Figure 1 (cartoon, rainbow, N blue to C red):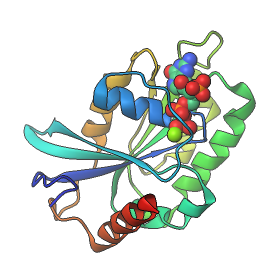
Figure 2 (figure 1 turned 90 degrees about the horizontal axis):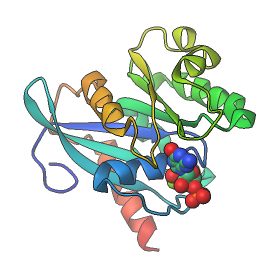
Figure 3 (figure 1 turned 180 degrees about the vertical axis):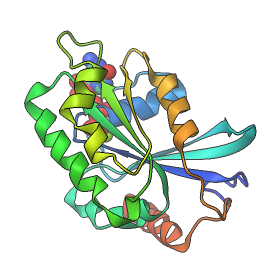
Length: 201
Ligand code: G3D
Ligand code: MG
């Protein structure tokens, strides 16, 4: 059973990236088709959306777990059951592109993420001078760092909504559903419990 009682097959999708990349804005835009003012994520944001994959309904749970050191020890359990990874980059912040690239390369080294599809979001395309999707593909050496997995670079503006639906469709298309669909694995359950408890504190 899923987070909100859904019995649909679930795809857990990790929303990762540096702080200020636009992860929370993207999540809100997808969920509410609205722009809300975000605050740096403390704890986590999670949204479940329904989608169709191979003509079947599925529940896509998007996890924006924030970048705090406190959360990092919990990332591994998320990795294990991830159907896809969405890595959001502020393509207008050229000064931090290298930092983002290193973070992504480190993330993809995780054994638990081996073979999981990666969707790179070239966010903030509405800002003048932002790197284009093609420039991002080259800068991030996508062909090299994503060998052995499906990948796609999606241009996007989480605040205007440009490319947001396309990004979600791409995630659904590439997501790998667990063979025991519908069952939340124990480690995810434990982590959800931990997060709920720690959020109440
Ligand atoms: P994060 O969750 O990855 O840390 P946020 O990032 O979603 O909190 O966004 C960080 C800042 O970037 C926010 O601005 C947000 O409005 C802005 N932002 C997100 N996506 C876009 C986009 O596509 N274009 C532009 N121009 N800005 C975007 P503030 O000023 O609220 O900190
Ligand atoms: Mg955030």
